[in-house]
Length: 292
Image 1 (cartoon, rainbow, N blue to C red):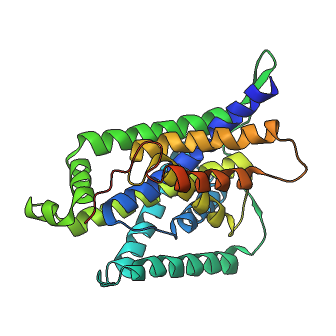
Image 2: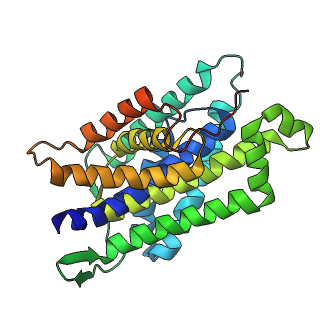
């Protein structure tokens, strides 16, 4: 029964990982870039959500979209000033630029908010639902529900809309998409905005789940998002969705199956990453990124 309880917790955690990994996947699929500052955008979203709630007292259903808009704009700024001007001939330059953005955002957060943990306010009144020996909190249901809803909306956006089709075309080939009339620079900008908005939503959900946020939280979730992206397959959005749930379930199951005074969740997560890179480097669901 303890295992079933942990599996429920794993779904909540995994759904958050999925949102982070989807952002990674979108940017990697369209631009072929590992956006290391993506975790810091999540951290920025957590603090934005915190202060929107504290200063305005707005409910979560308004705070979350406002945070997503704010982090989406942050993503556009990062792409426009830190990535777009860099010459494409130097393949490592954009990667190094995102590392620089990571350091800048983290130190700005430390300067503004301090280097200690900050309590995230209760966005909703917490209720506990009991199903026999299982207990589920309203926070867990809310986090899982919001994450799944955002993933479904994104899937519909990519699969059914004109912009989504253009994103898929750019992911296949910038040159061919340009010949077909797609404004590649515009699509790359939109991709950064959408990915960053999802990271902002994930930041708010992390705050609700753990009740504490810090300027250093971005690195942890950035690395977990990278693991999930590798697990699901590079450029595979559906793989990222499912891979996040798998990693969340695996992490919490490890706590039950391997009792220890030391937290082994990170060891388990990065052990999975190493195994994937050795035995199935294309990911469980295969890569969908073509060579340019």
